[in-house]
Image (tube, each protein chain N blue to C red):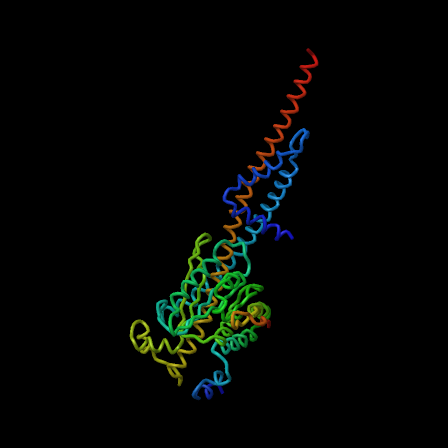
Length: 320
Length: 69
């Protein structure tokens, strides 16, 4: 109930480009009071003020919650970066690789009220889709999170392959993400997996990022053509495993590590974005409240002045 | 057993239809269950798995499939 009210009001707070006109209109509609009434009723303005005050309390509380959650997630995110760095050092990152079957994994959040991070992910994914699609090529989406799913539903229904929600019921952990990564690997055919997420830079800065994971066959093909992957042959392989097996294991593990980091980075960005969004909302509510209070007091004062002058002029008329 | 398995054409776990991720998760949970209390309970909380997956076919989602553990 409170959340629904917040959402309704929150949109007005954030989106209304000129809140002052809004505040004034509430008062103006009041000034067309019924004929013969002595003064303007300030009831509606008072109601509006109390509702704005309540919304401000809620947004402030949400900001505090996001801030305290952010702290723990941020350390975990920073630690998880150590998981993918060795892979990038070994295999490099090849965002420009041209392959037939592409899978775009868009990481978004389940909850809203967190600024533009979900639409950023969706926009980047759709651009990537255009870049990778072409004749004889196939690109599919795997969407994590409710908010991203809703945005893809509008025009990319046909290319959806999997959607995953409710990932953040419990605190994120590696086991969970790796089971998810396993599910994704089993359900899609790919030459390259591209994970799109918001990388956490600071509380106010999130960088849309693409991580590319190549299938073992593509890695082999690329390594034959030289480049960074060409150095793979200089590694000695222990045991009786063949290079193909090692590469397959490596790809799977790389994918689950990348996913873990991507999901954490995105969760961290979400909290940061929510924090600043809620901070803005509280500030806007404060501004609005100031304006409302000003109009309220002015109207009240005007009514008092009118009454006083009526009384004085009445008294003056009688005494003469 | 393990060494005998890895000598085969494919590792025994891949022959059983597992991916490397599943295999490493099983190994990880074995290691976690070797811990003493209270560390074991603490690490058990890192094993919770919960999400819902739905596969899409022809622009429509199929029934969501919950993965609880």
